[in-house]
Length: 323
Image (cartoon, rainbow, N blue to C red; front, side, top):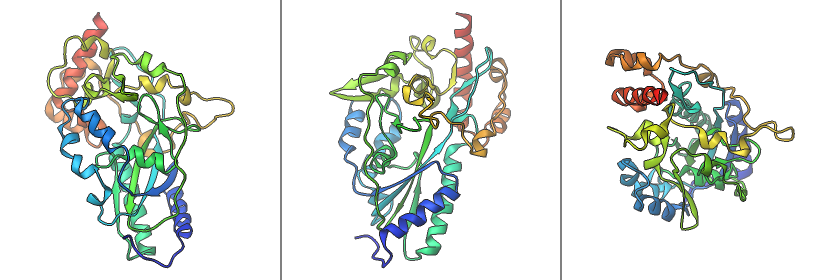
């Protein structure tokens, strides 16, 4: 049972929409916090070892089965997005960093905004409980975003909004409040296979009729999550990517600006993302001391790569430039 309150669920919804707009979120949707229908699909993905060496994805299975494990008595999920799109022209000899990692760590940015939202709502609904979640929390956030009308699953497994594309982060605020919900998003890629054909490593695969990403072959995984040596046959395919990869989103038609779709690939307005880091050259990265790396990566998503990982990736990029 969720929180019993005398406030109309539609009034609570309007309060939330007003607050999220003031906090600068791009989109807001609301859905029930019922257990995810895609849980079995997630287990199937794990059983195929598509998670590579990300053991935490497997260790968190019991928690991902029901949002109640994160927030007891959760009734609603307030789902928000934050656009991070901006240009990042790559120069030879310099690190190539995916758009998501150009500015401040999005976990910090989104969680800070969600905490403010939680605080504001707590003041208005003092008996309610809240739990902010970003993608580091054990929750299948894409499903709740789909339920909340934010977008639908693309073949590249990104959540795609038909009007805005896929260049956005997802955040969730779980609550025991009962709130008026949105309709589930509907959409699809049709016969388009541009992301599948463009993926340098062939990481996007069809598994029993469901499109999934084999993270063990994905450049984003290899350059960020994978620790240690990268297989020799994959190194040339990484090309110039130092941190992450944007290929499957770059080629997606839903990220192409059109006269009748001006919001696609719109420039982010979030100051923390627009404040892009300046990075040393690949050669200079190879010579970084630990202390220099520590200072350089403070507050950046690039820190996730690690000291040795960043040097490993820079060497692969330099070797690929010489091929």
